[in-house]
Image (cartoon, rainbow, N blue to C red; front, side, top):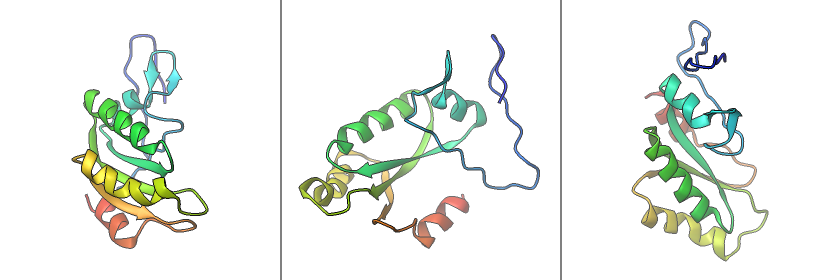
Length: 129
């Protein structure tokens, strides 16, 4: 990735690739450089966004703010994946899935359980886009 003072981000994707996965670290608004964040990168590359939501107390607020931020920046958000990160279920982790379904118009693409992986159906749907 190269960015000059008045340039847009640019990156070369290896030839023959039909799927590129770009993982953000820390959230959409985290700066990659001053004046450049992950949302800028996603927009510049024309990427579709899949939000991974760590299923824990407080994730509803974080997920909804992140989805709003991404949409406000003009990014195409495909949906979210709820990722169980707590070793044992609790009131929040048990109710977050239904709460997100009711609070967001976006699709829950999958619910990944501890030590699990994205389902074959969800992966195929995302790759087949």
